[in-house]
Amino acid sequence: MNSIDIIAMAALLQYLAFGALVGQARGKFGVKAPAVTGSEPFERVYRVQMNTLELLVAFIPALYAAGRYWPAWAVAGVGFIYVVGRLVYRRAYISAPDSRGLGFVLSIGPVFVLIVAALIGALGLRAGA
Amino acid sequence: MNSIDIIAMAALLQYLAFGALVGQARGKFGVKAPAVTGSEPFERVYRVQMNTLELLVAFIPALYAAGRYWPAWAVAGVGFIYVVGRLVYRRAYISAPDSRGLGFVLSIGPVFVLIVAALIGALGLRAGA
Amino acid sequence: MNSIDIIAMAALLQYLAFGALVGQARGKFGVKAPAVTGSEPFERVYRVQMNTLELLVAFIPALYAAGRYWPAWAVAGVGFIYVVGRLVYRRAYISAPDSRGLGFVLSIGPVFVLIVAALIGALGLRAGA
Image (cartoon, chains in turn green, brown, red):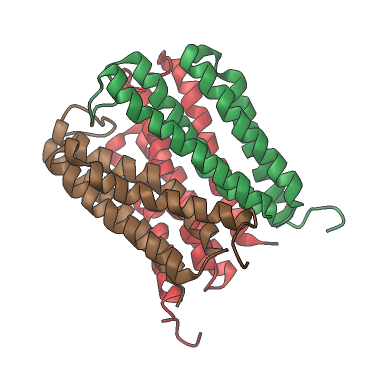
């Protein structure tokens, strides 16, 4: 069992699900492609996907890079917090965009931790390594 | 010859070409940076690039993850369908956004297949593996 | 020391910093989420992050793919130019969007070089390899 691959694929599936919800919201709020504006509730759903995309492009490489230097269970654990954080973020953003702070911190925090962990490993600064 | 790297780089080049076409469309339809709206034909070209970006961030990690568990020719073959699907999608979206369904399925389908294949591998469920 | 991981993580940190500046610009120019338009100076900051995202999704896989075939110092060196190019791009775009050409070339150029280098390696065309 490769826990890092599992977390990475779970994050990809979550992101694609957010994308599917954008498609659904197009119908629900009457926003026809190629438009992405014109309905505030639609824009919330769209911004959740975009913000998840914005974090995902950093999360995936940081996850794998950290995994080259640290135990898989620890790296996958941090990745799991990211996935949960995205769920919290989505729920908050849809109900009230201004309340998205906690979910945002819970998902960008793990990304930072993974990047720093990868840097510590790549720079050879890991104690005992 | 590493067929997975070749397909991955082909997908990146295709995506960068879609991006170059956005730059060209800025001139053609008179949409000056930083604006990305104001001309419907421009927005179609822009949305093709954005949608390709949205899929690419899932496609590349799924391609490499699947490649860790399945034969390269099979993984690269699925990836090839994705690249063709993106061409079909672009052609349809530019001529009539509502006809983009087939191209979309042909490109998101392979992404799903690769994610599921990687998950089966990462969970150790591959028969005979 | 793994110079390719270091450059990759530096590019991710730079990108996240650009994202943080978007958050800051929301406050400064009074653009409340989920809106991303309505203030031209805000849109510049936002477009810098978006354009960096657009390149990053190609840069990271190309960097690692090239690193499988060429010496790490050379691949990391090309990656370093990309990171500097993004700084030049940002500075130019914020002051005058039309002057962004040089920074753009300095960052998309390295991405192309890495993709072509990876393709040469993956196709087995590298002399002496």
